[in-house]
Length: 226
Image (tube, rainbow, N blue to C red; front, side, top):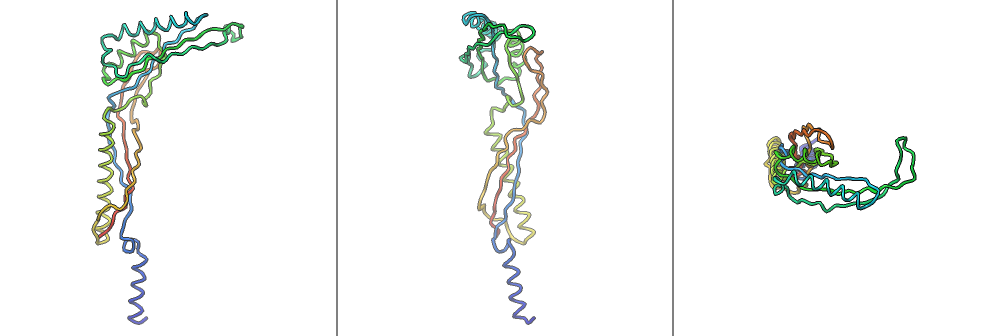
């Protein structure tokens, strides 16, 4: 091949190189923040069965009054407190063998919901719920961090920094410099429980240990190369 042919062959190779032709590099950056939840959403339900609606509702009201008397010293520390969720329905009564007796029984429910930002009070409140006879179930998903937006920003900043560092490394290997961002997509994966020991179910001895959670954010970034 003559010199002229070699020159055009070299130009053809450069044209097929994505880094040189496109002048961009696309990559994924990841950032995560570990934290201990400091708040919890709670929902307790008083439930009673009776022959009449008034009798069933009277029993649920008694349970609510028992609960509120016990938590009176902490009442002002419970945010978004509500006892407005009421329900009444009927069901067929069965005997000990599960056979239909032909009678109808009334079931009344009243639910207490609130948010607690002081987890030191959690065991006290669960004990009061058990004394009142409430039904409830507490899961890791009920716990959260009050500063969720701040945590997400920290994770996002870490993801962007990770992407920038990768871009600088790749550009250096190519003899180029990492330039401005062309496109950026953010994927927030949300909190993930890392450790949680719990036996907080209705009528059980309260015992809750809240462990760390992890908030992860991924970014898909395209940088211009200089």
